Length: 548
Image (cartoon, rainbow, N blue to C red; front, side, top):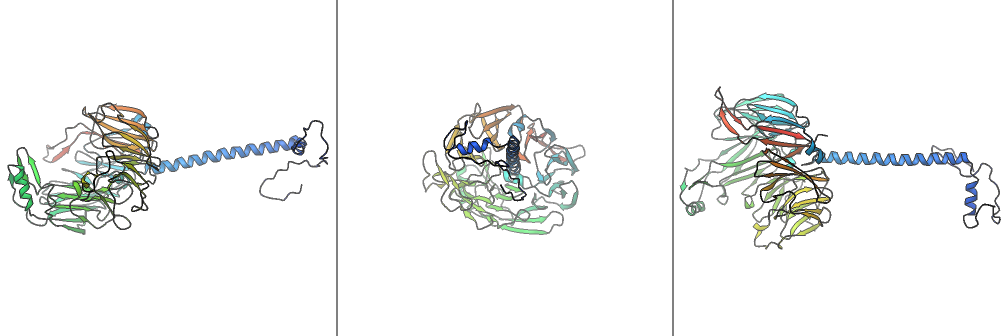
């Protein structure tokens, strides 16, 4: 048989000197039939040739198995890379429960997440940078009294938005100062703010501070003996709006300003109930300044904004629907509740989109792409993220039937999406039952009415994380303890319960695949030290587990 030179090895199963075979003859030990010639040819192959062939085949098998193993390892590495970068992603749920990990005494939870896996906490009058993987103290900066650092993460996705620097306020309100500290602990600079008694100043993203002040004089305090009189007063209420500005923390340069006019329809935060007396409250309001969102709510004024340093978008002025808070979504954009019960997505690459219901953002994902999950009048609805206005991918009908069109306030029934992975959506229904849904079809795979004893009676869910195959649930109770529960996402089987006699100070989180828990002794208070400065103490521990 002729051979061509080639870079590939070739094998010839015919003998070097082929014999002439008589098709009509029957060899003594060769059975007759259609395979005669093949059998005869195979028998004439020399043993040495068979050895070469056997070695080549074995080598091919080894290469195939080795290639498959390498491919599987690469796929697993890719899965883990996505997981540890995802909101609520822990590297290994079992390890996160079993691992003793690290613990550091602090007077706060995580105040900011910085580049390089550093988290910032308060320890007395100091700001402290801790390595989230090891708990090692990366840096410490003495700041003085009334320390306030940030901006800190609020929504799960903001744990994946590390900052290059943390902004810290300190000092009495009559002589406040701001410091900017880089991720490596270098103090970039400090600026005196002076007397801020009439203002609200908060750390903000991008090395800035958020400054809020009324745009006119505040009305005199008014009290009411009964609720009817207070509600009648709201019908004709007028007052000042707010001016919100973002300043460079060190130079004071104003980067952006938003005027929020007084809205007589936004009166849900105007009344303050104090024992047997009701007061009109213009002084108190809620302010969120986090890495990806600013939200401000006060009597007659409400603002949702992604300011400079967080991808600035147009501010949304006006009270949110049903008094709900805005949300920075794991899939991008900011969800703002509307009066009709639906969510409006803003801060997107394209134009705003009004969803057909309430956005149920997952508390944790495995980093894989998935549908936008919206609670509509018909039920839990999966929308194609590339075509939010198109036909739903699937709909899980509502318990009790569709919501009447004239009652949009009933759209949000308290359902929560705890985990969304490539294969499973973990849903908590209004009745507390946990349901595992096929992420692609919405079909119910399993349900668990009581994952732990006392569920929905004296135990409640405080957080949910995932390693992609399991959900790691944190369940709190009236006994000041908490339980870590591992739940198999494929079957709904409870794999482990680990109860601990400590009080959780805030919702558990994940950073770089590590489970972060803040426990507290529960007796936080401010006091004046011997040298005359006011210090807030909330003794407790910040802990990290599941590094491996």
